[in-house]
Image (cartoon, rainbow, N blue to C red):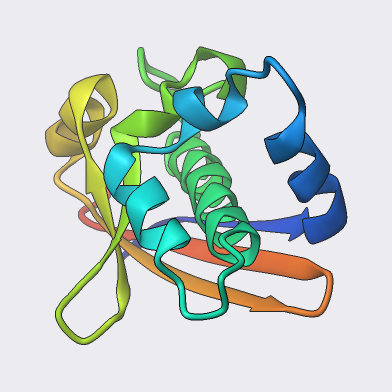
Length: 139
């Protein structure tokens, strides 16, 4: 059963500016070392579209989780300002498909719900987008 759906769209020029802002902790607070390493190894030589799609996936996950919790409870809403974005890691499986690896408090909350996240990423022109679907039992 689908428990929640989230989608997010990132404007690449604005995101690039955010990544390049001097003294900002955005990159270190948002991406894991693995995500940064993979982005910097892209054949295009431009990590920004790759990172923007992953940021969109993290935001989309938060939206899907919040949508899956309409009845209340301690984990009802994940406010972006209260989330450790590094606990939502976007990896690629052996076939290159994106997957979510959850850790920390987020993994604990999702584990209690016994749900599974499906993620799709894309980027084209000045935009990157992601959609996350949470699947599980409605309890």
